[in-house]
Image (cartoon, rainbow, N blue to C red):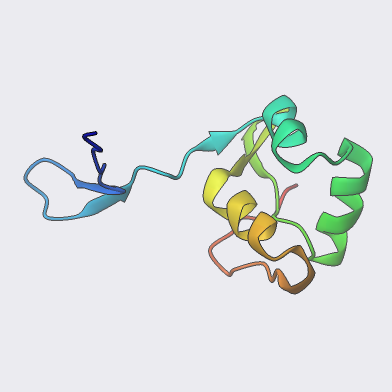
Length: 89
């Protein structure tokens, strides 16, 4: 049986920089499916710094980074918000 391995990073054309293929925007409905938590409970955890911060997409739309959600899922009790995260308004 042949198993392919897929890179988790790919270079930007001609820039020598890499982008993380596992990181992308996750909207509300998908965040609820991934975490299994209600919106209100996630927002409460977010205020305590125990859940990834939302990022503003537009005036009425927010998202989370998949990489931060996966880090939270790996160890929700020891999750600490990174400095790279943008605080929701």
